[in-house]
Length: 163
Image (cartoon, one colour):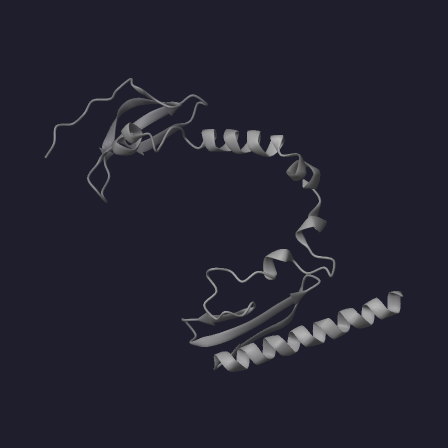
């Protein structure tokens, strides 16, 4: 076992090591109680302090993010404007792109291990128009596609009425 490195009083970014605070049960590293410049106290793995991977209680990340988004004029122009999160048809942009976590390959179709069922979901104007479970993936995909077609027809009918 290596000799303990005493880093009491040393500064690591915005953190100052105050005292040892036990050992990490996962890897056995020495934990340190640290005081951040913002006033918060946190317990940090000593190896992460020395390597520089932990430099604050989290306030540094918040400050850097705040500074970056305040300098981004496009972002600041859209702050508070929820309409930028939807396309011209009122569909959330987040629901249009297939997530990397999506195992079915179809937006709105997912598998639930606990129930051993496939689920088909579709939301339109803030309400579920489809929320059902199916025994097979094919049934769920077919239901999702049918719901998409029905919503498309409904949107078309609404657009025709407003013309």
